[in-house]
Length: 451
Ligand code: CA
Image (cartoon, rainbow, N blue to C red; front, top):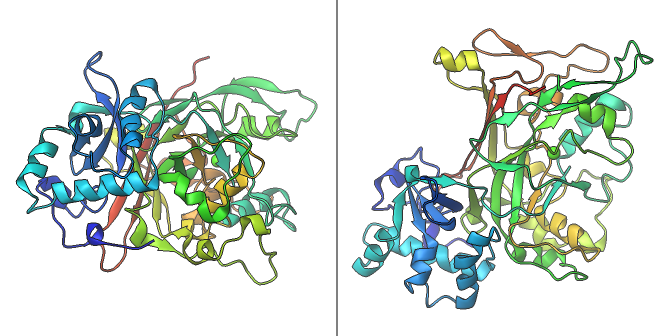
């Protein structure tokens, strides 16, 4: 992926907030969001592009003919109408590139007067809209691509042989539930569920009650923009042509429920009570300066099978992102204590499988992906405790040892989440010579169980 004038670090926008170095959405980013007016009953949801503290409503610009010179005008007409029906975004890489490039020209300081006026007419303050999930997300698949996560979790159960024999050959995944995907800011109810008998009383029988081991999972999501027909597959070399971009995902997990239910068919109620996603999709074009080589497999690891192998994907199939998780308890919020960062890492570049391989694998049997589908990476973890993307790993202190809780600035301790805890995930990309761009945040607060 090449960089061009839209990535120029010296570009500034006439939207002032976008020029604040701390803002995630400068003119070099221009991510997509799905928004509706915040007043109930006012208008239908539509696609927007976010800049600084503003949203540019794409439907209005498309209707006004602003994008009439697009390479695929019909495709953009579909984008303008599908949102109301809860579908999409249908967006080819060509159209995504065109929309970002034209908006970059219109939003920069020194833009032609006509372009600027057209965009000003389609702009609303971000505070005046409600952000929905950035994609219809009617299909949701969750993977397990972080080798450090798989190794640490595996070591809890199989210290001598943490990775199962299939791990280095096949991208492991399972189908998630799409109905419970919620946008950032939505509170998450602690689930009720069936739990195994206590380890020290295996004959006591299972119990049913509020989850006692509620966890988060820090993940990166990949949103599909173009479908493949049922019965066809996408070669790894072309897989990313079907991807719009990336978002943040919190795959909330009930570890006690998971432990009892997951064999032999995999996760079910421990995972499907809520999944939180960030508000925007950062496009592959915006991320072009931050691509990096795919994870270098240690010598002795098997080569991927040919349908998962592509030289250019190996060279630049990774994303150099920094990811962070912070916790703010109810008591911290009351006392005005800032969220406490419990994980920060650049481990996303160490995914054992790239998104191109994941898309190719997902469609390799003829399974059809659709615009707006969400494919999540799986928990992103590094090796060290401060880089682990879930509490299951972060508070694990070794085989047979009690959990080592995280201490919060309020003096409270957490082995797992308590009611009232807010979990705030953030992600960004930065590199010398380029403007930092962000993925925004992915936030949810735990509500007490109903029961
Ligand atoms: Ca997960």
